[in-house]
Image (cartoon, rainbow, N blue to C red):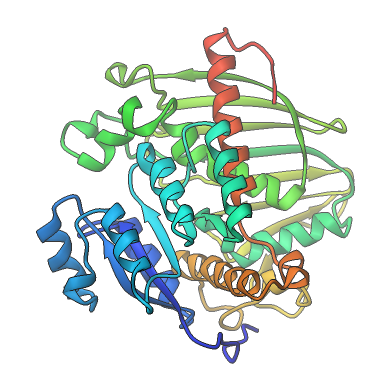
Length: 389
């Protein structure tokens, strides 16, 4: 079970850039960070409208004088305080991630950034090196990776329960943008603007989630890929609202990834199926407390979160409540923020052993996501040619 007795000496003084009024993602960050008492929200630059951001932050309990008009003022002003920020989360549109993350790291802050980390592999590698030079955590918010049953799947692969991995099928294919919703939705509009979103839409917005889950669970190393992408709502071009990717991994395994916002009638359909030489496992985010386990020649099994037959010695499989009760999205995010806090604490104490034993979605997860997007664009623009990863 989850250890609620674990505490830090004092909560990490934490702030946000973006995530203001009406932001679902901003709320998810705040709810997750405060869940276990490891973070305390003390400052922020929540909105491009300074007065609206100040009002919003004050309503959250942040002192009005610590609700800043922009991130540069936030970082400079907090650096001058003895009780200033120690960490910041960045929940702004994609095009701003690099410059804000860079400024935060240069200000000596630990950073949690929304994905994609930046627009390019080169930019993300620059941020990774900067974080290392400053001895600071750089986490990327892949919030689904906190679900315990994904960590159970990871352990099953690692311990050989399914044999050698042969095939991985990944998909995140919803139907909510089956029409031109961006005409009336500001949140959708910027995601379909290449100047703000970057070189992709659905591949970067949702495809990277199941890609990161694949890497976390299987440990497979991509070798090359081929991608085709479409803009079924023509006004979205050159950004895709549907894409299919074929992947060859080093060692001989193969995979596919389907990312779509036009899968009419679908809610999420985020799934990952891993086929081994002895058995297969499958996880679906709409039923996150279960993991399918199918051994060749035996009846299919449905493993449930919180049960004693799981690999309980793996902290990632820990349940916050007993089996049968549902744990969901916010618990997954809280699990990730819990790991971010432990990493920040260990880094402050220069405890490399603790860091080595702790998994969390770090800069390398962000870099791999960027590499996926760059390779997919190159492949699709080259007539779905195979591209080295």
